[in-house]
Image (tube, rainbow, N blue to C red; front, side):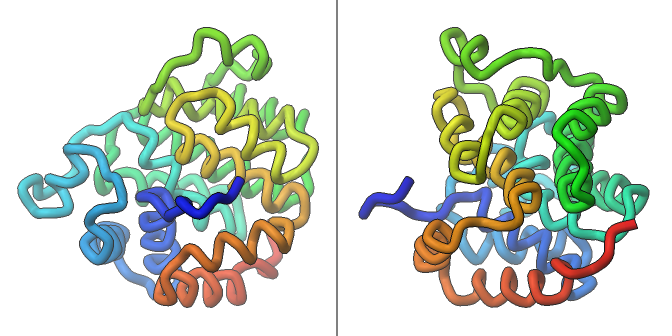
Amino acid sequence: LFTKRNKFTDDSVLTVGVADAILNNIPYADAIRKWGRRYPTAGYGKNFRKWLSGELEGPYGSWGNGSAMRVSPVGYLDNMNKVLLEAEKSASVTHNSEEGVKGAQATAAAIFMARQKKTKVEIKSYVETYFGYDLNRTVEEIRPNYKFDVSCQGSVPEAIICFLESNDYESAVRKAISLGGDADTQAAIAGSIAEPFYGGMPDEIRDKAIKILPRDMVEILTNFEEKYSEIPVI
């Protein structure tokens, strides 16, 4: 998972932005812009870069998976209704399309259910029922014909399937990367569900990941974890 060339990407930067928004009661748009502008070369999409610069002032109807890659902090709120509402809010500052919102909500809901110690069968059923994703495929079936796809509808279900087929945190991330698509984003989504489901990220992986992140990002994530990881789920 780690080499000398490892670096953080837009997934990490914008996840910190959402965590900062929740932790410090900052509007999502303001927090996401703050962090995106602080790290402007992290690999953002064309329209998102325009939004960061102010060339696009409001949401631009994106159906991309950026809404899902950054939503994981929302899954640590204390009840499902709040999770779904805040996932929509966090997505809609840029990704205010039906698919963009759905991708964020499905990911956040799966994280919330993983924290509730729900089974994979229960998580799968909920996501299929409420979001209409086809999760009745296997990684082996998906991989041969899968192509790079930045849409929520073409990457979020696949990332969730990687989690469902995993047997620990690392295998969820490896399966997501193995699809050969938008690897960092799909790994971010699969890993964000796997982490609470398996009781946390393995220390070895966590320690190496933290060393890659700048101090200001680590500070937000540490403070968020201290405040929200032990909040009872309802």
